[in-house]
Amino acid sequence: MRILITNNTLANRAGSELYVRDLALGLLRRGHEPIAFSTELGDVAEEIQDAGVPVIGDLNELTWQPDIIHGHHHLDTMMALLHCPGTPAIYVCHGSIPWEEAAPRFPRILHYVAVDHACRDRLVLEHAIPEDRIRLVLNFVDLDRFKPRAELPARPQRALIFSNQATYISAARAACYRLGIRLDVVGLGVGNVSANPEALLGNYDIVFAKGRAALEALAVGAAVILCDAAGAGPMVTTENVRQLRPLNFGIRALRETIDAKVILREMRRYDPEDATEVSKHVRATAGFEAALDELLSLYTEVLDEWRHTDNGDACAEQRATALYLGELAPRLHDHDRGEQALAAKETELEMMKSSRSWRMINRYAAIKHDALRPIHNLLARTKRPPSGTRSEGQGAEYEVSQDIFAEIYRRRGWGNGESVSGPGSTLARAAAFKEDLVLLLNGIKTKSLLDAGCGDFNWMKEVRLNLARYVGVDVVAELVAENQRLYGSDSRIFLNLDMTKDSLPRVDVILCRDSLVHLSFKDIFATLANFKKSGSTYLLATTFTRFAESNDIPTGAWRQLNMQLPPFTFPEPVRLIDEKCVHSGGVYADKCLALWALKDIP
Image (cartoon, rainbow, N blue to C red; front, side, top):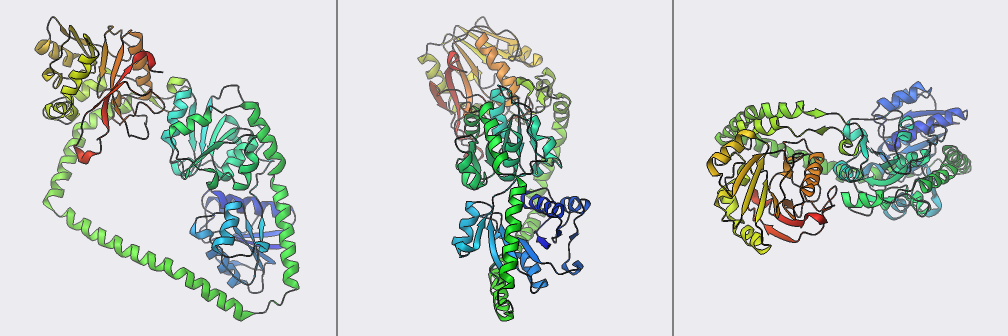
């Protein structure tokens, strides 16, 4: 049998491209003559050709009339149908949403195939395809390539994001860090594509994936958590695998907003024995050869029907083509309008670039870049590779270094003229909350305070604290010496200490404002452990209460942190002080100082 297979691209290693590869190679092994067509060729096309299957990018290169067209994607399928008069076809819908997956109506498309329930519903509801013309052929996995892995460990050690659209890396990283699991990422979106995932998947205990990628990981024997840009789904278990398989482990299974809490919850469902049973079920029901048998049976059915049908209605085909072109018209108009809008924005941008303010901003940016370049170079030099431990499981980690913060101090790297500690330490910023701070400290009868990351003491010197002892600590020696000279007294002392590792005094309250936000996850955990080790009672620290995701950074950089989210998962704070951050358009309006009892911190 001669089969022409169409696809909108055979360039990247993605779902339908790999489906075409497996189908073409399977047909070749069974003694058939497949040929693949796409207007965009690349790595997958080369792989198919190297295996002995012809691939063409122009239908004029087709040297024989196919017996049947196996169509994917409407533009490419219609091109093949119009180029090959008299050839019947099937059309396979691989997606319930993408425009290119829409089903064309044409007299020679005798049957439609849906790879899951969502695609079947699209064919029926959106395209009015009769249900008796639709065959459900679920996606498959090549069991000869994806062989069972060794037994899973009792406790997971390595996890993998296996996705071309890994938009949730930071959430997965935070959850993995919390459990001490190393995380790697493979996929097109991060520029790390694997040509041999069958050799890769067996090295991971938990895999985050959807669709075909999830099916392959399950066949190997990993515990799989369904995730994609569209959202999060459950860990696949013996309880839900039969319901999730007809959904293609895809969009209808991704019902939750993806964040670290959801991922952490599902990771805690890890059960190696259950994952092994799931893998056995997948291998028994989702093999490629069975799916190929179904498709070959459908080809035979279509050819038999075509031979017994009056198939010479050229007028019906012309009308169907006209209707198809009419359906394309709105898309073309939208494209034209988009190009016009883009051209208008480009003109507006060019006008802005000629303005005086634009030149001033560019000059300021260049000066700032030159000033901060040594700091960035220092951060890069302090990177070190992971070794797979809890503290080093998230890719490169970073050392706390006196040199980093000393360099920032000497170069005024925080970019503020009033305070070397940055704009957050100005008197104007502190004026919004300092009275609330005094009330809170008095309310819990604070007599001793450790200011961890005291900086230049610029704003704190204006706060009227009723303390018997104030201890300010900072990692920059020259800054501490200057503070002691200017502000030291019998009840106020400044010490050059590294709060991640040096012994700290026992106090009623540790104030850690705007410090943890500059530390890597590793150094934050070390700091928190050190705070608890001091035997102090309370921690009053910066948190951004509405911030949805905490990302790892090199120590010395900056980002927002919500201490109640993974990987920290602090409880509800005892008290909150709203810092009333209305600057920068209110983007940091959720910044607070939150009070926790140190004994309650995980």
